[in-house]
Image: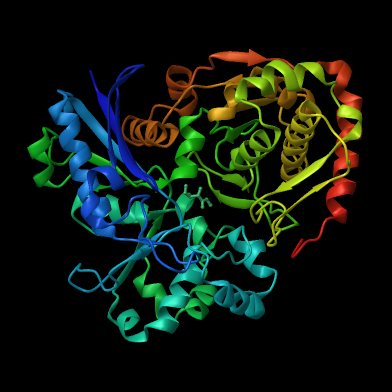
Length: 494
Ligand code: XUL
């Protein structure tokens, strides 16, 4: 039976998954901090004094890749049956190589780095609204273009010695094929360098970002391209040399596939430390408020990605302030209080917020007194209203939304999502949607199996909550009240 291997190089760990006909056959994981302590990155990045600077040693990712394969082989996975491989990388991170393939920059800035505000201002100053209109996002600190510009400014000599700049995804794909791998349009869109209207590097943006950069960027290809054959050295894990390796992509494009949402009409909400909302888009369009991003969809077309920083982070803070446990959220808070909660709203910016952009943290409520149950409902309803409000720019009425992540276990939260979005909420239990998506992409690229058929096999929902249609008008009124309240809050951009 043919099987496919998917690899996900995330922030804190690297995971591998092997899928067969309709089941996951084997999995392995390498935790950077625990398993590779010599790289000094307990949380996946190098600790430092400046919280805006977040780098990692790219050799750690290469070593983790080998170790994850070794662990699959040690666990008895039959890697000789693998017919195709692909992968997923944390987005935006960049690796700098010299002419001989050595590192021209010892460390790689990753997506958590926020040290490029000056470069973002310079790019915005030169190109204005064109950056977002054509690359899908305004200049963003963690995006690769501003990061490359900072490197060019800080260390022009090392920049001059750099022959190739890879993303985490194309760097690890290059390791597998032992050749210079291309970047796919999914991950390439997280750089502020790819023109999504032409699907080519934008020559003016690229040259302004750093002189001579065009020659240092990999080739750009669609997500179903075979980058090359597996290098002979991977035979030591039982894999067949020459096995087709499909171009890697970013973790968000891979998760879109791995949650079964690669076709437009369905959205995914991941309720994690941050909450994210993403969906396939039928056509290219951008968020007029500049918060949502547009990336390439590995299945063709585009996808949205909207990140709400204060997700579980805020739920945790309110839980602590109320002195309750998680069970209280479902059992008491959402049961004892009515939908709408007497109009109580909360803007839970415990940390700087990306959507809407709020650089100065602070929590704002439109009420003074509330019981713990009312306070919790105010937070949860406001979080869901914010997701509905800030995903509306896509112009799609989502009738099906898939939820994943810790807080999706709460049935009360799922009912709230159903009633506020007036959508069917489907729970999916994929612990590792990025690696699964990568394996599904390998199957699609190598044997041509359509994504819809792969989703039916690997991404079945485990529970469904339907909306109460009698709450539709009330939900619309709550959205209007939330929009007005949020508009009064201090903002930096928008
Ligand atoms: C997306 C983003 C993160 C990274 C790491 O823009 O910065 O989701 O891809 O997961």
